[in-house]
Length: 309
Image (tube, rainbow, N blue to C red; front, side, top):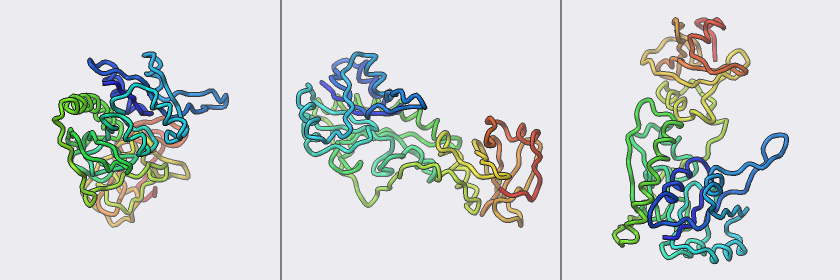
């Protein structure tokens, strides 16, 4: 197939590379978000997808609005059997969706209809899902509402972080897409309509989302520590400075102390009373300092029972 690829961040790169390396498919163009100015110099920075495309001499287009009639005409002039979309960042118009013979196929990082939206990887951890995966979907005009083509499920481990799950799922997308395209050509796909009543929405991550509320249960707080690693990260305040929490564990015990109070101080860790249970901090980072074990942190700053975060 001749493929137009639409994608932007690191997550989309393995899928693009799988298409480039495949037999029987040709990436005729890449469409990605416009270059952004970085730093004080204002020098332009390419998206990860654009960098890969240029390395393989693939034509790259960076429209501000992919729906603009002028750009739709550009797409019409590119040889295309299917448009593959992976974390592109813009919604497609009906005109674009109907342009290729095989339509537009999206590679989405969840088991649809669960976690439609911008941040499905992190929300699957934040909400304590037992499993997640990758879905290929025949796109329509809605937000991740199209018919399901294929799924690949993986279990979520108790140690899973947003970063580790990102790596796992990005590696699954390419093979699942190639299987989807092969079956599309063979006419053996059996699209499944999504049940809207079973859908959940993965809203965009913000820095404020990482601010921990110690009135929550320890289990929820620990999921936020893992799910928001590496961005925006889970954090609180200690002695007037931001304290990022990179690794923690749940202790199923309670004290009479108020949530947010240091309840136990050990040699290599300290624990905070929550709404239910203790949260033992194992790896942290104080504002202006490097990331370190709680033990190393405590050797440089004394922590006492009864102090509050």
